[in-house]
Amino acid sequence: MDRRSFLLASCAAMASSRPGHADDLDDLSARLASEAKICAVSATVLRNGHEARRLSVSGCGTDPGPVAVFQAASLSKPVVAYIVLQMARRGKLSLDSPLNEIFPDGYLHRQNIFALREAPVVDTVPVEVLRAITPRALLSHSAGFPNWASKGPLTPNFAPGARWQYSGEGYVLLQRMLEAVTERPLQQLAEQEVFAPIGLTNTAFKLTPAIQPNLVSGTPRQLRFPYEIAAGSLYTSANDYARFMAAVLGDEQLLALITRDPVRLQAPRLSWGLGWGIEERGRSASIWHWGSNPGFRSLAMADLESRDAVVVLTSSEAGMPLAKAILNSVLPGDHPGLELDLVR
Image (cartoon, rainbow, N blue to C red; front, top):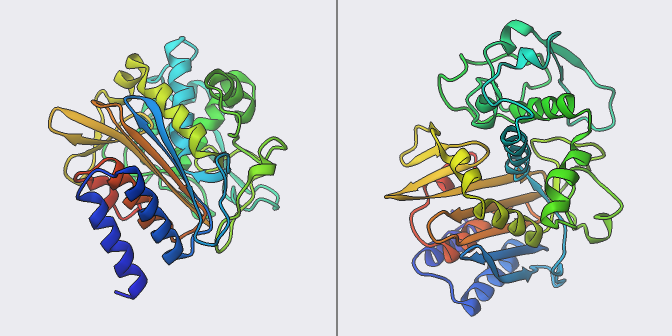
């Protein structure tokens, strides 16, 4: 282990051993950001479902500021799930109806979705496959699809419901489902269903004029999303995303939908609900998610008993150890989800 990795691991272990005092959290974050040369870190802490504090540090000498906008990567998935669940609660769609009812001619899958300047290359997922897949299975990553189809046709790896497999492709299919049902693009739908009602003024699913003045740059590289990708194109600030989490924590019906009958992971005390990972702790639980895009790492977790929560956004591919350290300082204890190979 090199010196940087050793220091990051040591600080993370120290943070997990005790709840973070405000000064300790500032010192820890600044030290880790400086050591890993992370130029922008923003975090927001909720206590009992209400904002308790904000944190903004830089390892490059420039404070990103309280409204800095980051690529939150896969923290987009809980937002997409929120939209699906809200529509299901209003009877606009069914979580358990097969997707061939929405795509009677099959689903047009774009193979090169991250080739942002290239013409689409598409294949069709046939109706026979869609008959076995429901929105509920897509939300819980149990539809059988791979994370990404590697620039080829999209086919399931196993029968829907057989097991859990994290899938960005599944959330893009959810996006196309929402767009087909509502006849609106995801950005417009999210503004109506999430951003405006909750007051998320620095959040978007693609580059917009409103968020561009507050954008931070990722290190060592980044993508810039001119169109929506439900699985990972969310731009947001830590304060906005914490406000979204507070809205989720304040809705008991929604939490019941998210956490009821989750799909079990092979790792102990871990399962996946509708849009969120679930970490079991005795009679209580936490919901959580992470994000990993080129140039950015993010992490969010909420304790369902205390309603304490934290969201951390970083502008570096070296940002996950720092995000884990902050989370462990705010929500101390054993967090098996953070040990998954995907969360790095």
